[in-house]
Amino acid sequence: MLHQGTLFVCPTPIGNLQDITLRVLETLKMVDFIAAEDTRHSRKLLNHYDITTPTLSYHEHNERKRMGELLDGLKQGKNVALVSDAGMPGISDPGHILIKKCQEENIKVDVLPGPNAALTALVLSGMPTESFVYLGFLPTGRSERRRILEKAAFLTHTLILYEAPHKLIRTLQDIQETMGDRIVVVTRELTKIHQNVHRGKVSLLVEEFKTTPPKGECCLIIEAYEERIERGEPSLWIKDMKQIILEGKDNKEAMKVVAKKYGISKRDVYRAYLDEDERENKKEGK
Image (cartoon, rainbow, N blue to C red; front, side):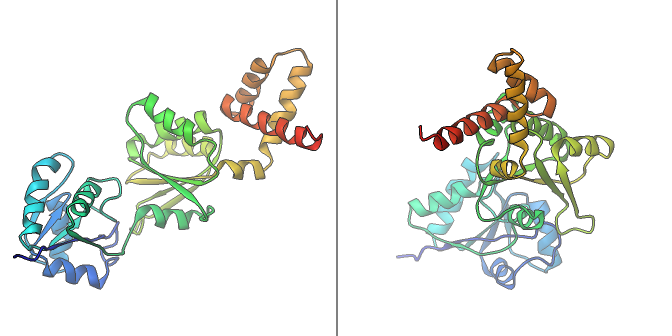
């Protein structure tokens, strides 16, 4: 009976080619073949380290076709290394489906530690790291994209997402409209010579990138809902809203005026208003 092989999940550098572990290099040399998201891209890394292991492509467009071939090879005792274009395979790429299938069929999977853009950007941002939510790449469709952002708007966790440079301004505008004028950190070209970190309110970042269009893949770190509360902004919204109501406007109209004044969403104002009402009721023992 043949011993089954092992699927080795191998993180690769997100920019600087030196950011690779000795264990990953040894693994890439000893496996029977390497399943790569883009074989041409991976070949640059392999050539740099004189690795001659055969490669085959495994990406979202040929995933079903390759799945059977990879599983058959593993069952026949072949060892396979899985790599993506950059970072940890399985994060926002088809690798996780292969990993899941191997686990379902009792094929050994070994994940090697290494580079990851999301965690690198999170620590670099200076945002709270105690809890965070990874949103990956947002959908292309505007309604679906905004639905996800609206759902995440009141999460009390730091938010992380990836975005292509040509879509960055659009995404920042959607963040402002659905989450309000939050603090956002945009990291670009991580670990490369031209690494950049842009920090500020999202409205200012929109203007900055309109003047200087971004280059390179971006990772966005968005402050949590509770961080906005700690900065005291909601208290200003509520104060203005109460004043507008005293002047004769109804709640809906007051929310609309305050949202427009501060460049935030009506949902933000409404949530802050409900939170304030709940706090007042607790004080009164209701």
